[in-house]
Length: 113
Length: 114
Image (tube, rainbow over all chains, first blue to last red):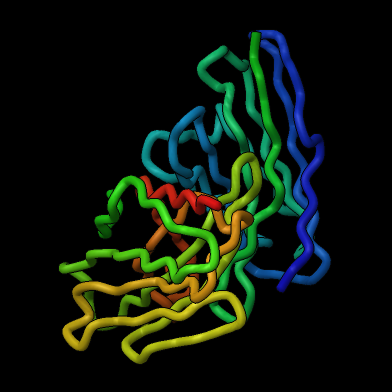
C-alpha cells in the first residue's frame, strides 16, 4: 500500500481567489491522479499527472482552471483557480502502484463563499 | 460513463455476510473488476480486484460469473464499520498512461445495522 497525505485538509475561501492543494506520497510512483467529489456525488476524474510530462485532463476540465504540477515522483499539486461556489467539493489525489491498485489520499474539503 | 450497474442501497445485519452485486454486461476481455469503498468523508479504500477467477483477501471475496457479466463482493462478517458506499469499477490494465483511469459510478450505500 501507500501512505498519501494532502494539505490542506480543509479550507474556506472567497470567490475569485485560488487555492493550491498538495499531495505527497511515501514512495515513488509514476502515475498520480486528481479527482473531484461534489456534495452528494460520486468521484469524477479531473486529470492524470505523470512526472516529466504535461497533465492529461478529462473532458470538462481545463488547465487554466485546474493547473497541475508534478515536479517529482512523490509530489503533485492541484490549483483551483478563480474559485466560485460551484467549486466547493472534496478534492482527492490518488497514486497507482505497480500492484495495479490505486490508493487515495484523505481529501481536501474546499468551501467557496 | 460508468460501465457498471449497482443497487443504490442495501442493508445488512451485523455479523451476517453482506453480498453486494454488480452488473457489468459490456465488460471487455481485458477489463478487470475492481471494488472500492468510501466511508463517510474519507478517501476511497481499495478492497479487491480480479479478472475472471474468484479472489479472496483479508477484507472480502470477489465472485465473478463465468461469463464475466456480473460479480458479487462478499463481506463475510459485516460490522458496523463496514457501513460505506461500495463502488464496482471495470478497468483496463497494462496500457501505459491509459490503464490508470478509475471511472466511478454511484455505488451501493451499504448500511450495517445492529
